[in-house]
Amino acid sequence: MELAIEFDSLSQQIINTYQRGFPLCSRPFLQLATEFNVSEQEVIDCLERLKAQQVLSRLGPVFNHMQAGASTLAAIAAPVDKMNQIAAIINKSPQVNHNYAREHDYNLWFVVTAATESELTQAIKDIELAIGYPILVLPMERSYHIDLSFKVCFKPLAQEVANDH
Amino acid sequence: MTTNLVIDPVLSDQQQAQLFAEIEQGLPLVAQPYLAIAQQLNISEEQVLTTIDAWQQQGLIWRFGLVVRHRKLGYDANAMVVWNIEDSEVERVANILAQASVVTLCYQRPRVLPGWPYNLFCMIHGKSREQVLGQLADICQRHQLDKFDKNVLFSTKAYKQRGGRYSASVIKE
Image (cartoon, rainbow over all chains, first blue to last red; front, side, top):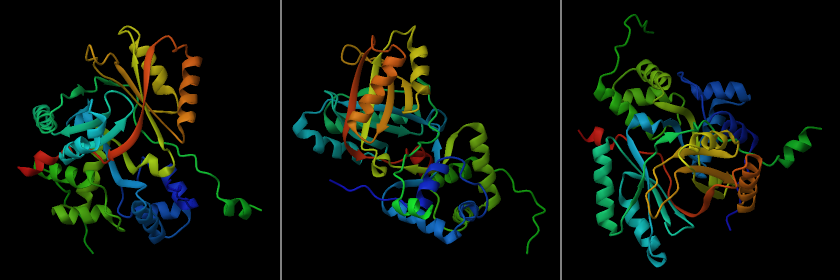
């Protein structure tokens, strides 16, 4: 099993403070550096490290997909022995972003995005044709929760606890 | 040194589409990331900053910052909880779920009968399956939600996980 990455104090602070409200100014990393009492380069290096560890997917906007274009959740019930193969075909579509295996008869769940509704419909038809199974299309009708940020509960760092004394 | 006496004009639709496509892939990790994007698109840093700010004000952007992968942070258990709630009750239940601190998303979606009776979806991320099920049981007990038909779909594998590409076709033109 993969071992959990240990996060230094700067990583923890950046992750829990800047999932939203990232500064819009000429030197944003310098602003973070001042806040966390480190150098601008240390902030950039820290983010590079998180990126290399694949913890950081990207630094940027999360668009409101109701406004940004068209998107939908979709699912198929794939025969278990063909799941990997079918998932690979679905992934080939540049319009698919998330694609997960889940425990249910509908066992492959993915999100399709497009600039317009008609392109979305076309993309779904294309995938359906490529995989040969009907797609369950479940567009969002209403959102009750704004995805603002996700509070990560980090384990306290042993070193920091020691330093407190 | 330059004195900026001329106010930069608002970006054209084409330029906005290009900026949109550029930032949805993430900012470059350089000291002046907005300037780097501006230079690439042949617009000014000020135009980049004011346009992103306007998009935030308009609600086109939910949030602007780090987009992290939960799994890599030790949150291995990811459950999509789906509910079959009468139409007259769905808003009330959705608001309860949306306010629970462990719920990261809560969406209403259509039923597709006969195979798919569930019309409300929420996501719970946790460090283990037991933790997620415990949190769900806790919400159900506190708000008397046990009477509703639901199903918990844990994810067993992530085949793909990245931001949506809304702009693909805009840019081709």
